[in-house]
Length: 193
Image (cartoon, rainbow, N blue to C red; front, top):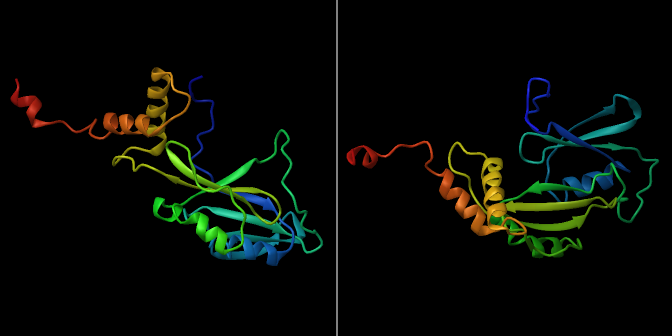
């Protein structure tokens, strides 16, 4: 499939809205555990009985939660059914990532432990209503002017050619080597002429 004039050109995630329970349980997790500043609150404009809390996850986008004090938290995992959200992943620095197990332990939050995903590290845990949360740290910095998506596209292509199961450090390193100076000419090339 190729993109063409009939597709809608998205430019990133604008916000994600979750259905929450009470206001305080929402504040305690999103701001208290994840450190996302609580930036504003207003009624849910489609259901004024609910409060709409807005949090800044750190990338100038929004995480919002509809709160209703009459809804009780349903402890347990969110259902794994078609159309359901499996998990939300938030980016953290690699320097933060290596300390996440100890940090979550100190907050009393059960977690998966740090997992190496080849191109990133991840740790998983559940928020108070059962939604799976991932904190992920990329293991690479893309070259100037190159998106992470482009690096991962190239790493995937190299992985497929190599017949490997998933992207690993070597595929990322090879992709970075291909992309690092691709648009910068060298005078050495002209000296050879």
